[in-house]
Length: 322
Image (cartoon, rainbow, N blue to C red):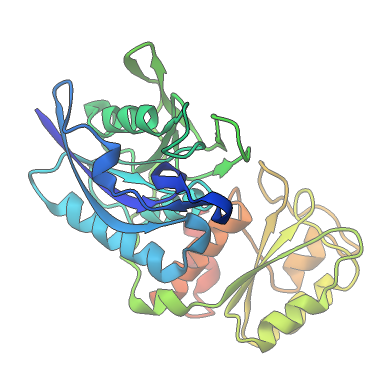
């Protein structure tokens, strides 16, 4: 009989309405689960009880440490993390980066509050437990289970504000067929990174988005504020408007790392265009993010910096995980 540890962090799945003050995460994780799902037993405890829009890097590190401790317990066969959907993709990616155990880690949540008449949390938890206990999902790293689909953490994004199928992207590794979990793929695994150190909590890492008429001086401002890395969410395959190539050059000359990602939902960075496009941005010092979206690229950069990766070795270390 498999045993799964559920770690609660709050989010909509743990939220209830509080009149004109709106919904607030208040429910303990023990209220979200049954003690047994078929031949799988579950124990639950809380790490946090908060909306994920309130989380900082210190909170993500705490969740990662708690997951690591649970995975190290020989009596636990897998871990489920309940989490708010707003920033679940960042936490899931961090957990995937540092995942060094064969045991599955599965994140889930809800789009409707616990006091909603059609709450989706209990079903999502039951499916996440099933995924975490599935022997065919061992060695899969961190996964996201939501509305009948299990996908890799890497590449996943929240794609709808209210729909039950909140997430897209990544690699679909399994799906529910009636009451049966069907495993269809195995995600590519990367070398596990060290658990983030306390320095992770204070890494200043900003995201600046390119759009018609965008202000390149925002990058200068981020550098003046002490940002160690700026992720430029460019247009298309990695482009930006007038002045951005010069801003990238100024930033890198001042010791700030610039990572070039894209605001497009899917697809890699492919430096192709001059005249301020990706060719010029990379020539000015920007590091292409591969397939990583801006939010997951930011998490990777913050982990590398917190582990002591220097400016000179950063590009090679970053590209190892792209």
